[in-house]
Image 1 (cartoon, rainbow, N blue to C red):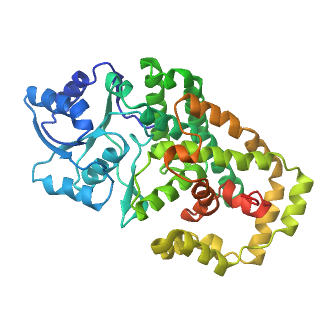
Image 2 (spheres, helix red, strand yellow):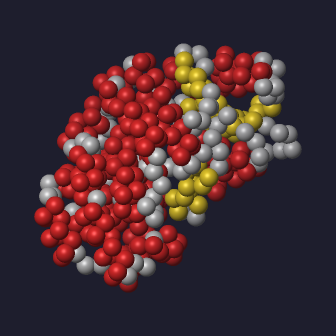
Length: 416
């Protein structure tokens, strides 16, 4: 298990200063935006400078920060020949910008979250937007995390709900991961899956406290987010914590970017999309083996040309990249498709068992609502049609097997 020092407390700045002094860290590059600098960044800067340490700060002034080439380059421009430890003062976007720049400049970074909004603080990968394409890039985890509890609890409830939504999505991600293992030979770790499930259950048990933003509730949420990130780090990629609910969120993120529309918090979309995925798992639970046999007998192999056209229509300029990503599925022949259908029946009992562990849509909606999350697309400025399109098309984003892939063969997407 990865050992990243994590401090979550009422005053995280004193442990931060002690940590830096103990390790002989003297020079820093602080990255924040116009919101996170006043609430925490300025205090961090003053604390370190008061301890005789050197701090340069990059504070984005733009109303919305995107982890793209523009913002990454702004930080790179401030880099000098001094070996500096980077300080990410913010939530997911600031952390990913800092993560990639620190890694590419061969420096380390420390995470100082300002809101419990994502599970990527301890992740090794950065979720970036490169040429308007949502891309996951391997970089590095932080050398430590210092989370000031007062700052976290004072974060907007929408950001707290987003963090909760990111964790709630693990109910889908875990089931999808098992599907990928059973039906697509994807690597799987029962130990890490159990850790993710415990993280999910711990967060669900604190739903009421999180919805009220109590210090204890926020502490539990933050620990869940940190644990989820460590599970991704230990497994080596995002598979333990991301399934179709995340791909749907990525699809919507890219759509909003292409159309120049305001961004929506990642975890808020994950929480909403988890409800749609839970509906598919509900449909799966209603099928018995005889019905599955009938549906699979009637199922026809998706036509390569038709799928390529769907990808072009749904993803536009990145279609060519996705043809490569989806090659294992696009290149399936009749024999391959027949083997897949056979494998579904061979593992039917296991598929039903994992589907039974997924909470119902109504249950997830109730939990997410208690935490302050939007359970209708309109609550996030989205339409029902856009979320349905994400459900039917987002599986083309990754070469991973999910309930959406299975749904194509079993007709679970019919009528959506």
